[in-house]
Length: 406
Image 1 (tube, rainbow, N blue to C red):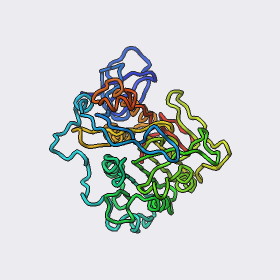
Image 2 (cartoon, helix red, strand yellow):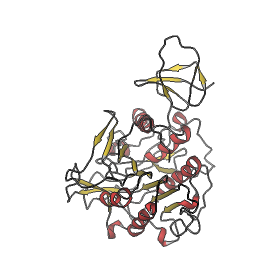
Image 3 (cartoon, helix red, strand yellow):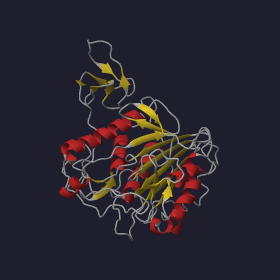
Image 4 (cartoon, one colour):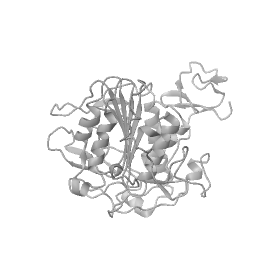
């Protein structure tokens, strides 16, 4: 079929359309049908197929300084989008269209149903069927000088992806942003803690849960000796300067440890220092292509109660995460969020291995092209986007056989 290419890389062959991998045992190659998407191709390539890419960057979601009194990075530096046609010719839209919303139309005043999922009983197991439930948090820090511009856009993109690609019901998606009028839906520390409990409340076999956070992330010294690097990772609520941060230990105890058998939790965290933000005991090493032990040195319990927890983080624990401008140079998005959503739209149901590979390939393309990077950004990131998204899990699995399905 036109447009389909069989691509060869270091691990063999795959279809450029669905990225299904397969073996070719003969050199006498004619037309080949992909057994996954049924597309036929006689074209072959040794180069990676195009993958969605960053269009430009701004400043990081945290300053290089870390610790309990560290301050996230200063104001955003917006760069002109010079590579949209190079990396996204098939996705280019007229600048007069709404660049922030794709797929489902969203209310301009709220991203929650009325009543919200937090107070509604609609997300309970009334039918006895497995449930899909999501908590999406985007923190702008409007009243602070280190405010972020892309976090609400991030939440909108993830919400649309859940609805359009994974059949989540709107009434089962809880959104916390500063745009919400209801004070219970503001991303304060208290509300985030309550919402995390709501996410896993009464979960049972077959349920699919999603936790998403876009905002500032920090590190602080580890005082209970359960971290291999000596630091706890944290997320910052809107009121963290007054109420404090939320530690990885707390997130693990609230949404990871209670997970019963048959329940799957996915966390996507687009923040600085977010690598092991769920304190999961296995971290995937992309270079070595194997799982590494991340269990606490002091023997603390960090496992689930039989369920499966999987986390995709914007960067490693000691790295910063950046925003990107999409399409027209005006809309801000977290780099991980933007890339992940575009990949899922173009390649539905990729394996976790292919998903992580494509995310890294996209960042490498941006680093190699250097397109649209301002002098300030080049200085802050040492001429490169220094973030390596990380995959971690509560148990090991074959990343090139298990598919990313929420």
